[in-house]
Structures are given as C-alpha cells and as structure tokens.
Length: 117
Image 1 (cartoon, rainbow, N blue to C red):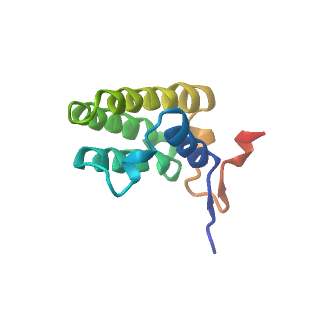
Image 2 (cartoon, rainbow, N blue to C red):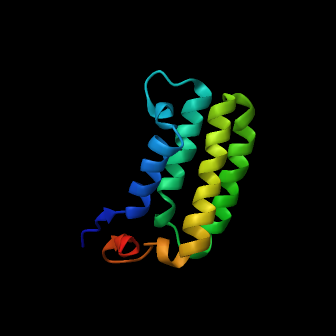
Image 3 (cartoon, rainbow, N blue to C red):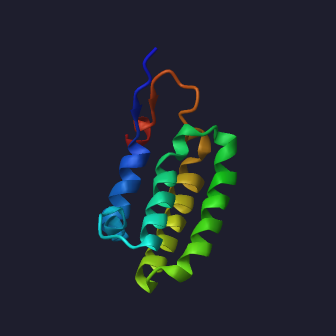
C-alpha cells in the first residue's frame, strides 16, 4: 500500500511562513543558529497532520514552549512573526477546523484537501 502525503495544511502553512510572516529566510544557508532552530520548529508544525488528532494539542503546547525558549535568541521581528504564526495556527486551523479535520493519521489516502473547498 502506497501512502501519498499531500497536505493542503502544510502548503497553507508554508505559504504563510514565507509570505505573510516573512520567515522564509530561516530555511536558507545564511541562517543563524537560532534561525536554524526556528526552521526546525516550523517544520514540526508542517508535520502535525501525521499525528493522531488526540496528540496534536500536546504537541502544539510543546512547540509553543520551544518557541518561547527560542525567542530571546531571535531578532525582535523574527520572534514577533513566529509568535503571530503560532497564533494563526491555533486560531485558524485548530479552533476553526479542529484536530479531526487536520489529522490524516491512519488514513489510506492521506490528504486533507477537502478543507480547501
């Protein structure tokens, strides 16, 4: 059985990371150590749909704690944008759509593109 990972969620988040929150530079070669850590955290947001829906809230809380620890090492603008991004994920995706709609755990065809319609 082949599992195809196509996520509207991840595409939407990455677009927000790059365009609205201007954090795309943290994935580049010239990123500082703190920015590389931020990139690692942001990638974890993108992988949230792979978790069971009942595990997502705990992982979001963990990501928020990691961001809080990292913010003093980031520029003011990066710290502010990372915080705004986290708030966007919670308010739009988790409160509006819910974890059951986001999670593709255990699905044969792992997509959540139905949320786009």
